[in-house]
Image (cartoon, rainbow, N blue to C red; front, side, top):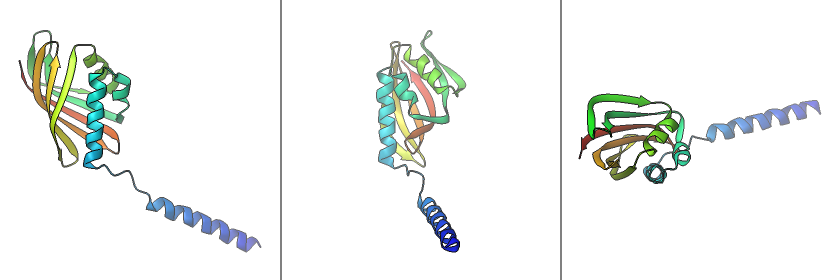
Length: 149
């Protein structure tokens, strides 16, 4: 009887291990990535910091090349800022008159690369934005601001 019970326990453990081995992490498809990008754009434009922040994985980061100086209405060339407090960064950019338009998004390797048009405090900034998405979470965003009007 003890032998059968022992075999039953071993059998159940092996079944559980085999089932666990068959599971894989969620596969990120291009349409799934685009859905996350669309949600990010919508939350940001609605000023919903909590909604946008919930899309980010922990840890994650945002890097910005050529920071926008909204007071002077210029791009600070050759600047590179990295924000690891993503929610704080989102709060900062939604405090001003900020609107993001992402267009021509394409999958490039493991990132979605989009053309950007940001309207901030009456200035129009154009550039590109790259988002790394794994599963349904953003792991990194790189923003490249190229011109300001």
